Length: 349
Picture 1: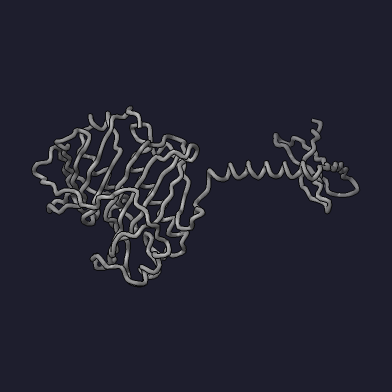
Picture 2: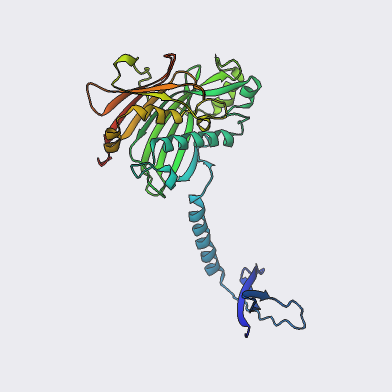
């Protein structure tokens, strides 16, 4: 079979005058055993090279390069791994919502959003250059065997993203008393810049070995003070959720046991996993017709893989779109106390 001739570009260079010179070389493509072999005879005696010099004026060349640079930025921005915004204290990261991030509502779940919050704040720790080991432990914390534990989380969802949406998560630290580290987030639709979610959390320090709470060492405070932003998106009322009488809760689900994959690197149940356990006692008929738009969770104690939990839910007497929740250990100790607000699935946000 006759070979098929073609011309391919293999290099380019700019001369001293700023013109762009593109070199092209003729190659021979021929099928051999069903496979096309690219034959390039580099010997000067047998190789016939046809070169074409393309001269482009300086003005046109700059326009081409500028356009290509903008196109590259547009493509690359979608896949950015994480960056610090103009205010170096604000960190942002982009995520694409995948099919496995969605639930029965054909949108991202509340657990998906909370996982994005957690991942972004860890990226912030990494960008600050102070993450030593564990989930955001600083060098000073690591030296004193301290780790972070989550005390409270509040998330308000204006709209849930759906499959293939690209969202941008921004996060920063706020001062929150002597013993807490405050964190805030905003999730945006990266195309429209619409705010999808606002969230805040409080962290406390615990000794990794004794499992006792610890006050902030002065060295740790010095590590964080340059990063603080005086802001308050949510939780203007910092009061705790009301105590609940488990005997009066309407819906109960017994025998919930954490699995190995529910544990984090500190060997206790990851905070996001509690959400699913907490919702186990919500009636399926209500889950089918409603979605969470506001969730507050207070974490009271750790939970290990061998613990057996009880999930309890009650609707608020004043309104049918608000629920109170308890996660209790078999011994009766409260693990998580929660409050959720709901809206019909098809209601406009």
